Amino acid sequence: MDAGGSSASQGRGRTRGYLFLDPENEAADGRRSVVYRAPLVAALGHRDADDHKGKAREEEGLGALPRRVAVVAKMAKGDCRSHYLLRQEGKAYAELPPHLFGPSEARRLVPNFYGFYVPVDSKGRRLDYRARHTTCDGYLQARCTVDWPTPILLMEDCGTPVELQSMQKAERQQCWNLVDSLHASGVAHGSPHSRNILVQPGPLSMPREQRTLGTPSFRIASLGRAEALWPGERTGPPTRLARNCFDKKRELDVQLALSELRLWEEDE
Image 1 (cartoon, rainbow, N blue to C red):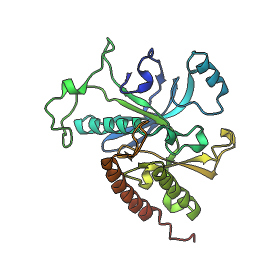
Image 2 (image 1 turned 90 degrees about the vertical axis):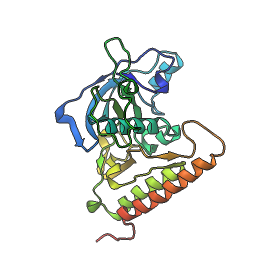
Image 3 (image 1 turned 45 degrees about the vertical axis):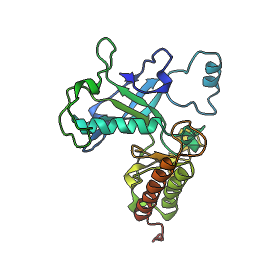
């Protein structure tokens, strides 16, 4: 697999990683994709602020240490439309402003993005969909099957979707604060349904063995429809088009989130 479109892979030697997929690790099987929760061994992702050993290696030009992390691997179903949507989600994650990922685990709004990996042949050449499927009408409505392996979208494993029926108002408020903070950071989600809000044991500022679901931590995922005022690392005033697209999706976010989180309802 090759890290397609990943800025981290440009101008450097390729990094070898090992992703362990197994049918037993399947977390979700949807209409357009299959999601696995699996271990990965590689030198990937954002280094936490308190990772002094990793910082020292980077300053010495040695690169990051390989580490074992729990990841979510998202793979497309075997049709053109599904592959198109997975590529779009990979592009959306790659263009998110870096500050969304936060300098430390406890301050991140979204899961770490570990890259979008495309299949290659025995000579290391990408199996390019554009050269193999030239007849589809932009993939918007295409249902034709594909004859090449699926790319893989890799993200940090940040838990499971929330169950609103069992949540207290204070926890639902935390989920709303997550959407609100995303907007304040210049990003509209586009689909902030409860299935896209993840919960894991917290607080994340504590060592992993001391975290519990009694003090949960939340992240918002599935940003394939996100709209950013400042894509990537761009600065300065946003364009009028970016502002209009952001405002429309922000309004949609508010409507969807409030209708599902029902913050006006008190605890029984």
